[in-house]
Length: 383
Image 1 (cartoon, rainbow, N blue to C red):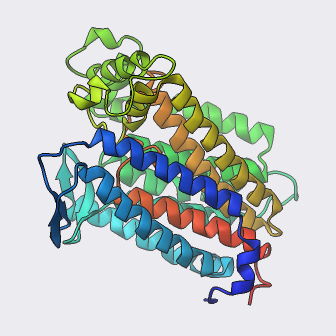
Image 2 (image 1 turned 180 degrees about the vertical axis):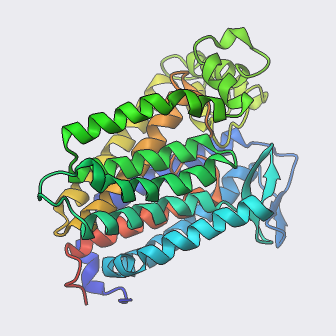
């Protein structure tokens, strides 16, 4: 692996870096309010206990610092390294998912984490990047035979690469992460190109499999999808999350209730208000203006990321950058759609804002890899 060269700093996408830091700072501000509890000290992973009014904010700040360190490491790794290590990363992540199924920690009825002593590790977060590079390697090494677009037979192996981790993650169960993996992989395939006939065939097969897939969902997952159409049908059960979230978002009106003045979060009517529903806290306290502001920041973040993908000089680097961008896009759209009642509750965090160490490290690593693509602009010409 190459060492970070000072000359490379001139090619860092500083606008992308600035937007990333601004979103992280906004997330810390929201988390301070969402996790505000001045009567409880903060246990820093068993090493120390400090007096701070918001455990979620303080721990997330440490995750951001660790994420920036991870980003710096990722920036120093040549894209060529990921090309060579894609299979190893993919298989290693699959083994971690198998380990979760066998030895994982059960939290709120889901087996998604591995206990590593200091904290719980969520391997599904790292599978996201592993799938991105594995798909990028496969598509770069096996482009369409006609040089234009994939035929149906050429899609078999890529679809298997996507389906295996999706199946393991759905068994945890974690429908949201599984769907985001599928969206990222499909986005990479579509970026290269698919013949219309092959695309129609795949969509037809998915339509046929829709009902059997529905039967494979857990009861609570089915209820969450059904209650999306009518949350009031089960206000104390499956519709509780959506109902409370919509109340929080709507009550924010234009300018919000003010910092730490959100009744839904401060009085803990809003479930998971530091993780999945952190956008609801932002909307309640900062209103429509604050909500649109963070969405605009995400828009500029995605625009910068797409620019990097478009400027990359080789297909593998482009596909990696596109996959990372698609991952962010899927998380943003699914999370915000979920909290305003347009999508079912599937447990997808809001990138760089929701509380969570595994997600922060995974996303920051991805941004670091994308910065590396931006700095080098080519794959095999790196030194």
